[in-house]
Length: 373
Image (cartoon, rainbow, N blue to C red; front, side, top):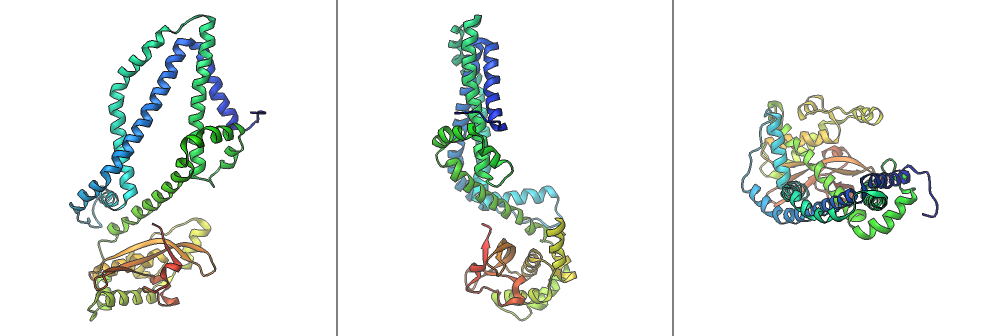
């Protein structure tokens, strides 16, 4: 550092080094050397556990997916207990979402590997720390060397803290205090000269991509709750769906008839949108609420369509993502996909936009709708 600054990040990092150095002076060379050895040994075990857990999770993921797929769990009814609903959602999420499955297996593997290594750590540390007994434990020379060793330990702790801050800034570039962290001259030097060369592109590039993909999968997992919540269909919705699709033979004819019905019978609820945008007030409603009030926003259209389609034997899912606003921008949106056996494919449809045109599997659908994952 050419000059010190008053940035709190800089002062905090310096304080970590200073406190460790003072502790080293107080403990002497012997105690400080043992502390430094414990820090390095602990870091090595953590890194080894992470590497082994990542390898094990990657190897086990396809086998776990295959095992879960061979043991289908029948979707519980809507009146099932919260525990059953949670377990079913977790089961289907781990089965269907690869990143979530990897993360769960990684956490299980890391916990198990760390526990196994921890069982041997006390013995290894005792053996490894034995040579430290020859280090002087008293006197002014011991305290000087203790301070130097403590300062080295403090630098290690400060670098660990810098790595955490670096990961925070990479994952959340628009989060609070990111710019303030980057203004610290000490953080800049540690990040550019140590963290970036050591981590390569892992933290700065790959970790944010992984985090975004993981967030997308978690959003999809959150969507899956609709499969359970909306599973118990009210009789009036079932009756209406049967009447709308009466005389329709193919899945496509049924799907299109329901698309036209939902798209023309339900009115977009502008008041609900304003309540959310202006007061952050979200009014959750069920397909039954939408059916009775004939009002809703995109997610309500999509959930009602899914409920009616499933009641007549169609495979359908709710999809969330971004929809074009017609002015070059995009906003949060929801629509549906229905499986047509005659085509052997899933086709998209947007009942919310039905009043504005034909949005039942148009050729330009992906130009205006971006899936979340």
